[in-house]
Length: 111
Length: 95
Image (cartoon, rainbow over all chains, first blue to last red; front, side, top):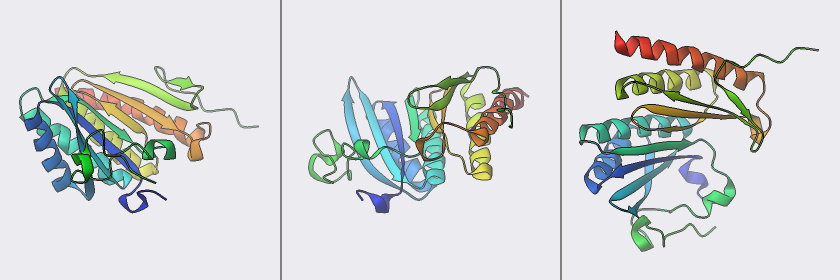
């Protein structure tokens, strides 16, 4: 199964600007046992960072990331936690921030 | 036959995908965070983890049934307790 070792839950934080996105990613990975799987430049200055992990860990990470955004001005645009993404969704999720495409749109999981 | 548990006001049943949904609006980020913390504690207690979408002053909660099925009494119970937590979070954050 694709990404089985990453855990089932998916956490996303969309920010206005890169600084709050980096701050959120830092806070999320420090807050709990999650893996940063991607950062996507949405356009218009919006950046989305994505993490995977166990459901409780992703929940805690996204809350911490949102707090970090709040500390960086008006950075938080939206946050979302999907406890169990459908397998069809798994195919379009990034596998890691440093692989081909750097977690951008061109980088998708090959299951 | 056991009567189905009543759903707290404001929650709605969604047909496709079968789920329970409610949007909560708050006056401040502080209230939003208090609610999210309370909801996380409820999830840890019950083992039910809803999908959550939130911004500075709102939280969208979506509850699915076990295995993607129709939400049952456990999910309805979770929704009803979440409704109480939202009120408590608003009061606590204001206090």
